[in-house]
Length: 91
Image (tube, rainbow, N blue to C red):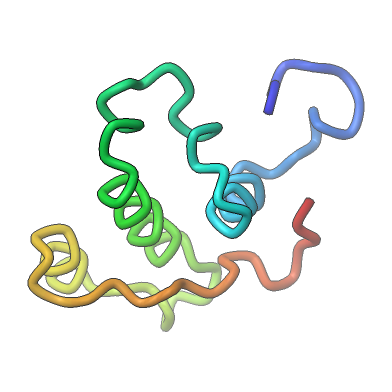
């Protein structure tokens, strides 16, 4: 997504766009030209899922830092995150 273009895309909300990329399986758009990230898609997906948990609008849904660390270290399973912005329209 070109964040500098004119029109509707210019008004896109980054969290919505990132969630849409996750949901649609287009994570490569999030890390464009980052070969290291693209080489390990499973790890990339896990990191994006953790990030989506951390940006939930409802603070009660956000994991503790301890839980985030456990997810990053693969001590606990990362569950599928809900939409971080339930009150905004996703693209």
